[in-house]
Length: 161
Image (cartoon, rainbow, N blue to C red; front, side, top):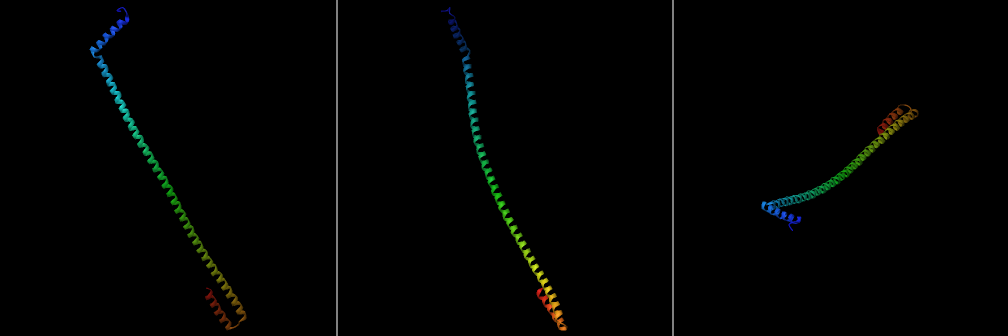
């Protein structure tokens, strides 16, 4: 039995373990393992806390994005409504402008017609006076003719003008 190498290996192992126990290597190894376990646990807790913070930030950013999208939609809707209102106002102003221009043109036409009628009447009266004057001067002679012609001309002029 003492001639076999496995026996000596077993005896050396037992002696080594006793020396380790006497020197406190087991306590040191256990303490190191405990510290490492605590450090890993702290890192896991920190990672869990960071994950929760990231989840909260993600939810907050999603809320902000949704709010910004709603606000953008409201801005676009308001802009469309404002554009429609401005277009309606412009159309109403244009129609009013056209109506005023039409009314002005109609009044100018009516004035021109009245002026043309007055000019035609004046020309007709002048022609009638000239014709009457010529006819009366040829057919009626003397002082009576001149009085009639003067009186008729004055009367026609006063009525036509």
